[in-house]
Length: 95
Image (cartoon, rainbow, N blue to C red):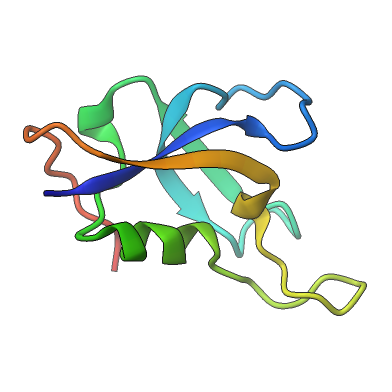
């Protein structure tokens, strides 16, 4: 079974273009402190993780530190749900 990260939206409630979609690409090192996040409506195109824990590690992945000294974890700004993907979702996480 593979798992994906479903993005409900920013925790602060500001709408974004990835709300209600599956995470399809994530690089916390891009775009300064914001990271680069792409999403899809199609679960078969979502990033697929081997375990719930691997997906949670991606969600918490840090890229350096913020100006306040705390770890920079752009994806944690989003309310997410880690869910099993349909069996035809075979896309792997990037190396």
